Image 1 (cartoon, rainbow, N blue to C red):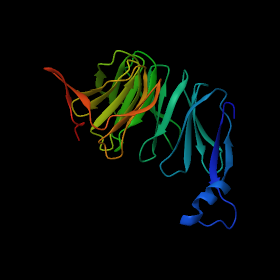
Image 2 (cartoon, rainbow, N blue to C red):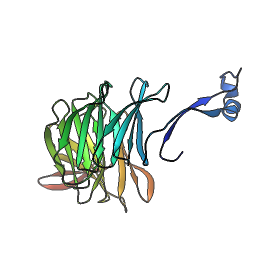
Image 3 (cartoon, rainbow, N blue to C red):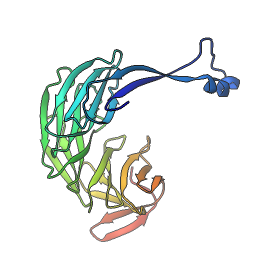
Image 4 (cartoon, rainbow, N blue to C red):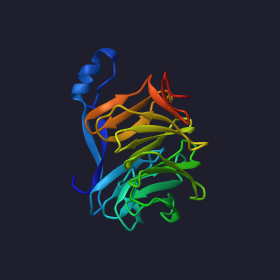
Length: 256
């Protein structure tokens, strides 16, 4: 649908049972049912995310707002106003806060219960493309067109560190499952791994011939997959470039 989003659910024909021998036939008989349309945005919807308890949804839009919705009814709970297009919105791991990334060079924290802004993360000098919570909810990582990623204290909104080294806009930033590392993806055709505790770059993942749009850790934290403009996905299970004061060298696998 245009300038909106629909909640979809896989449904099955009455009487269908899941058995090993019937799975293929069941898949053919399955269908997708639309549960609700979340209508209210007046611009393109850039992202949508469920809360971890699946009770609420937050959306980010080019209409200068993020919106909070009841996932069961599709009713709007709150509108989170911004001064420019909102590129992404997500819930904290405990579901009590919402984090938004905005073209106005900031990320913002909101109370998920009231829809009130609790902090503005100011420090980037250009648009913020994405923002993410650490798994424990104590840190935030942001990615910006200013060629940097930044780490923030999620309780206070205070900047903790700037992750600088990319030579192009940073498209995304994602924490490792244990929260000890961050991987960034950039227009400079690389992804990079950073240590959260020291803000030190510990790896540069090279090899793409075009911009890297996103990168993510595997659930065990031992591998990284990156998506480029000219390649659907590239994984780095065994080789990466370690950076240090003495130069760069190839090693067997990312540190864990």
